[in-house]
Amino acid sequence: METLEHWVSGAVFAGESTRTSPVYNPAEGTVSRDVRLATTADVDTAVQAAKAAFPEWSGASLAKRQGVLFAFRELLNARKAEVAAILTNEHGKVTSDALGEVARGLEVVEWATSIPHLMKGEYSENVSTGVDVYSLRQALGVVGIISPFNFPAMVPLWFFPVAIAAGNTVVLKPSEKDPSAAIWMAKLLKEAGLPDGVFNVVHGDKESVDALLEHPDVASISFVGSTPIAKYIYETASKHGKRVQALGGAKNHMLVLPDADLDLVADSAVNAGFGSAGERCMAISVIVAVEPVADDLIAKIKSRMTGLTVGDGTRGCDMGPLITKEHRDKVASYIDIATKDGATVVVDGRGVKADGGADGFWLGPTLIDRVATSSDVYKHEIFGPVLSIVRVATYEEGVALINSSPYGNGTAIFTNDGGAARRFQREVQVGMIGINVPIPVPVGYYSFGGWKDSLFGDTKAYGPDAIHFFTRQKAITSRWLDPSHGGINLGFPQNG
Ligand code: NAD
Image (cartoon, rainbow, N blue to C red):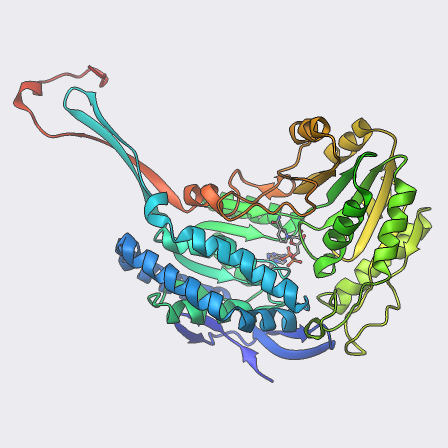
């Protein structure tokens, strides 16, 4: 059985650890390889490699750094089918979805190629007689990135292209559940001309994460994962003096007003609820139906669900398996909880006939109506193909419900009333909003992130926020000596 090793200083690195973790093909339910789990000392080796590469890389010209990103963009685009196959093999998502993930990551690479423009400072001439002030931005140093299982390529791509373009060096700790895409990208960066040591990958679990959070030579942490871990990451890394952005979990509501186009709503609900088997932080998991639309809407969603195919992602199915058996069992357990709590299970995904391995981690699309807001089905982030319906009487009741959620990642409103949509975008306490758009992931030149328990720290991923996060600003006040301005003056400097 192959053991996937770390990547340090532009080469495979086995390190000292003897611990490994199994990586599954979730469509077969079998172990396809093991992944090494780094020790604290292994993480230190990676950080030291990144630290050693920093002076030369941060001092490289903008043109040189931009050139590497352009080359990486070309290679990634040309070979996206290769990494998509890795994603399908280890995560289970269907090929079209895997290609979509890479396409959204490519957007950030393309945006990062604008780094010469994005790093420009400001200049004010003659702020005082003969005195100029200007600002510039510089890289932080070694930056740490810790990513989740559900987007093994895209989430790292949210961060490292901008981090590298800005002159930082990187240690990435991908999810141990599907770690191969990170190594594939590391090799591609080398092929694109990135100097050794600028981008390093360590695999691992809590030990390696803690080693990064506490390492004195790591300047910042960018984390994406579940809310309890995001909170822990934010607190621990902050305590160790680091700049932190920690994106957490979600429970995304879709508010459907009575005037909405219900065919569009049903298509959108099915796509956003069951795409990637519901393992997306921007998946719609709750439909808030303003009566009297619920019965008609449920009928339309149900008819679309009967046509969905579940199976191995390479076989042209609509939906793949879940990431692990434990996760599949946990997600399925919410169907029992729903029944116990008095909800109506309209479509039960258990026992689905999947076009894949007999031991694959299967659960079919599931629809649950009349979910009580006191039920764990409503309160928990389920992270699987389970779509809940909550019925409300008014727009106000729907918005109040969304705003009472501890999460604030994404939401959507479906309506033909522009005034209602405008009011919603103002009143709803959520970071990313769709108006007749179910998965409002901002394009690469905006920034991605939620509110409340969906993001700890004030800086979102990619877009303009990323330049702010991955650089520090200096303001310089300069005077080239003019003898007429000499002399002693102990007063506080003033402009004049
Ligand atoms: P997770 O929190 O279990 O793991 C995320 C990362 O943290 C992994 O690299 C993992 O190895 C590490 N980790 C796990 N347990 C740890 C611990 N006790 N101490 C230190 N590190 C630990 O998340 P996941 O299951 O991989 O991913 C799914 C979650 O990520 C969902 O909650 C989803 O909403 C969230 N997510 C959020 C966004 C967003 O943008 N807000 C995007 C994608 C996924």
